[in-house]
Length: 277
Image (cartoon, rainbow, N blue to C red; front, side, top):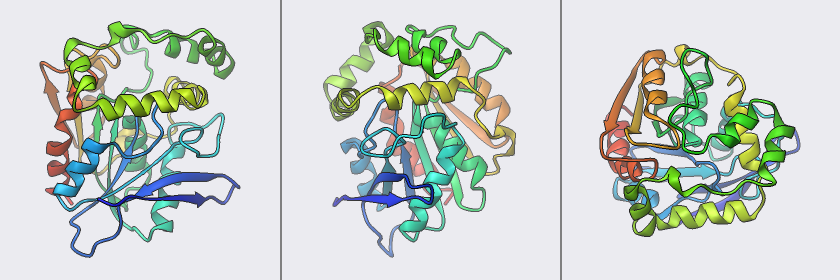
């Protein structure tokens, strides 16, 4: 599958680095992929393969400060909707589905909430829920330090980043096995994103810990939530909370999966979106 890279200029002087597998009149669906935190926004090979096998046109992009996209400190989760609309407009795409993994999940939901005439369906895989006092939002996270600091604002999150180290206990054995094999490209992309600097991850975490800027209850498109029960990055309680607050949501709880291995469901999730296109 051929992938074209492009920079999409925005009205505020920023640009977004995007990727497009190309228009095809026979394509049954255009899907916008929302990457995790941190990633560059470049499409990952297993996702490309699954889209190609189904004739899906795949779009992806780097959120601000990721993968060559212009920084936008202070962005909220809702800001992703206008950015995605600008990319879709630049490529002549009117209607599309959205799918996001981990940190991409909330941004996919933002598009579903704020672009109701354009989004046909949304999938969030291992996606974090909005911060709330209704339950212990941090409970079950193996390494919550980044998000705890983000609650105090960007300066505190940036200070934490200066000494932050990856905690391998976040991943189950099935996650590590996935990263050693089929999802190795995802791990390599995360490394590239991290080497480029922490700003994207800092801004993601601050956005997750602050009000998101939209109402989950206003989402009219069907939404599929996919969650690994053993996830130590985004605990399963987040998925059940989202299920209770999104009107047309369904949940696939994967009893043996963690944060990475749950991505094996991507092909089935694409089929779910195709059925609702």
